[in-house]
Length: 307
Image (cartoon, rainbow, N blue to C red; front, side, top):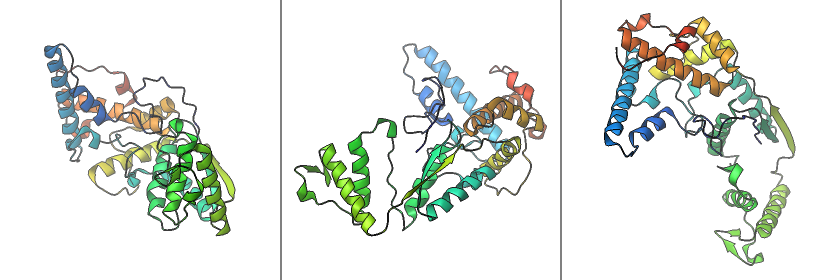
């Protein structure tokens, strides 16, 4: 179970989709704009040329920082929750604490409901469970990719199909019409799911208690600093060994915390914005990379395309 109260506009590019995945990554935006098919070919050419130039500057900045990005989606602060492989090196302390607590509850055979506000890490946790428990012999993971737009029958069908992989199948001959091993009528699918639960319960394999992990803690300034440091280490393919964050000053870290209230998704977006601005400063001033710093003042600067 996962609840939010984001209150975001429907056209917010960082608003999650119906199944909780981010709507667009940085790379998605670049690809989408490059493929625009407007009526004015000359204007379209200017736009794509500008996008190409911005991308080149960002990639050059990343290489100057010691990474080897192929696309803007490889740069720091562009990771997304809804990916097949979550970047474990980016986990910070409060993430590890949550994972340890929830793992303990799972081992105690308890149901878990996860309740927290928009951007605090529910989707990331869901993907971790989906991936890691899916590889565990003692678990079968049934996932509704788009729970906000599903139907009761899809819920029952998802459970029935996954249970069938463990050898628990409904008596199909008891139902008038089936499709892919699932009763066609919603009430029949519900009844089949109920029978399946009784069969599993008889084997002593059902979970019986519900635990809530409520209110995932937001980042504090120290967590943001750790996230920044981990992001750069991950970007370079290096281990995180407790090093201090680079590029971002302590004042910038505090400012990010004040602006975002420590909400992880908002922290990532703010860091991404400041990283991009730092890339423009580096390009326009021609300063050595070790002279570039992200400060709170950088948030208010305006940039053109020229040097």
